[in-house]
Image (cartoon, rainbow, N blue to C red; front, side, top):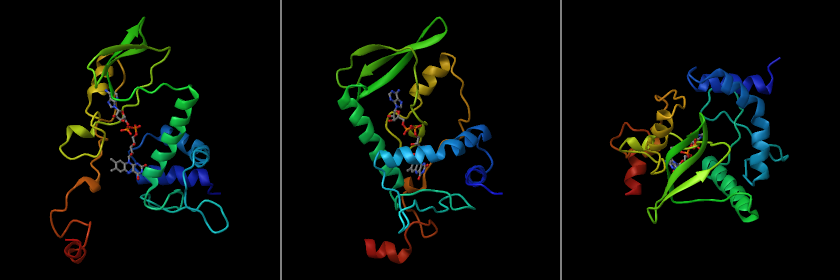
Length: 201
Ligand SMILES: Cc1cc2nc3c(=O)[nH]c(=O)nc-3n(C[C@H](O)[C@H](O)[C@H](O)COP(=O)(O)OP(=O)(O)OC[C@H]3O[C@@H](n4cnc5c(N)ncnc54)[C@H](O)[C@@H]3O)c2cc1C
């Protein structure tokens, strides 16, 4: 029997050109329902059937209709949902946000990551932050390329710092240049048709 779990696993592996790490995709498939439930609880307005259940489509992935979506705004709506939930925790006092800060280095004590050194990008002041554990979530490094919609800080600084201190580093080839970054340069680029472009001018 083809289960929903199998469909998502298979489709994600195929959609990733068989390059994704299978154990990670397996785990993603296992917890995907919980992830969608959490996003819904955070207010993400996924598309729904008239009966109220979540609508699924085969977006980007080739075979099965397994993707939830929010019109053409899925990424933006996920961002708004998670940012809203984060803001709530900041107000409740469970999270302290340091915006406009750049991590400069990770502090290792007895072989374990126990904090970071960060720079306040407004005042230039260096700060120490201690933690029992350190999670690095600094994304990819698209800003090394001329065209990128990544955050300005996504420039390898954090990756390089932690790699030097012994963190594992894998798959540097997975750096995305997204088609939406590329300015239209000719009629063969599938963006707007020549007629659409003329009427947009
Ligand atoms: C145009 C575009 C469209 C996409 N569309 C989709 C889609 O439809 N579906 C999909 O699944 N994925 C999509 N993706 C991919 C997806 O958005 C990314 O894989 C995902 O956002 C990565 O999340 P992340 O938290 O790992 O990193 P990021 O979201 O990049 O977050 C990293 C953060 O770390 C910060 N940072 C970096 N270095 C430092 C430092 N030294 N100190 C402090 N902070 C630092 C950055 O400022 C940034 O805020 C898209 C990506 C792009 C660019």
